Image (cartoon, rainbow, N blue to C red; front, side):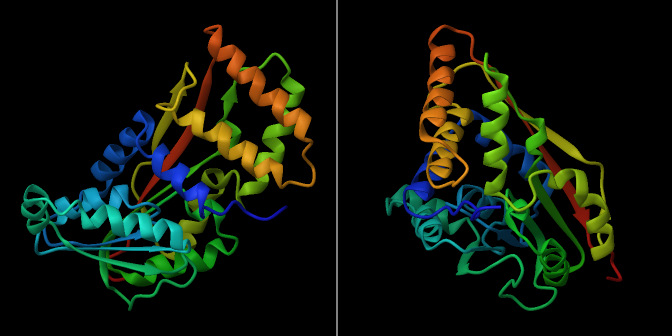
Length: 276
């Protein structure tokens, strides 16, 4: 495995833009339904990124609630702080008064910087597949939830990725190299037993499928092409001309109306037992 993908600098800015795509908006709606946050709740977003979900959850908890986010990326935390600060207009000020307080901190999933039983609800989106010591991270999540608290963990199974290509061997090679950007590329297949070992009770698993039949900035896969190109540029096993040919074919398929992309994500809804 090479170094894991880090969302700093340009990568953070691109992730911020990607959050506007229809797939990502639908994902946040799904997560909010699963989380079932109530007024007054204390909510933790592990790996909060640029703060889109966090800022939406502020309205769900209301003025008596609190939302907290941690991330290892200073770039992401700056974006999240700016998003939660709003624009300073009177309309924004009025809306902010009806939202929960915000607490953003540098922190890791394996060492969450909050006391035991602090939160009613927690969420982690595309985080645990990057964490090498997944057992420790789940123990930390269990620790900071109050007894009876809920959590949702969402991650991708990269085996679910379907991308049209006339050169199946090249596509397979590129995607195998891309798997090195995470510690656990098939985490949803492995997560259930790990959750039970950590002490969680599971609710029915839910899934999301991203499907793109065009390649433009409003589509999730457009940004994935850029992330993969950037990651492979620093991968010792990648060849630049092969990466260019791969992305070039995708753009040609899009131009000719033959583009197809599909990816599966899995949302695990959890509960800490009342006596936990």
